[in-house]
Image (cartoon, rainbow, N blue to C red; front, side, top):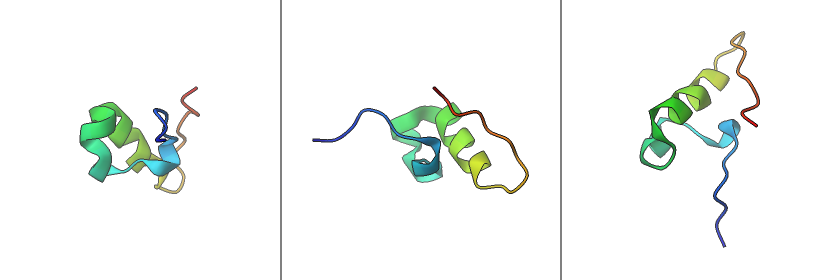
Length: 41
C-alpha cells in the first residue's frame, strides 16, 4: 500500500505531478545548505 503523505526530504522536481509546484519547490529548497524549510505538518 502506498502512502498519501510524502516528507519534503522525499520530494524533488521529478515528483511535480504528484505534489504540485509548491511541494516540489519546498523539496528542492530543502537540499540547499543554509536554507530553512518548515516541517510541513
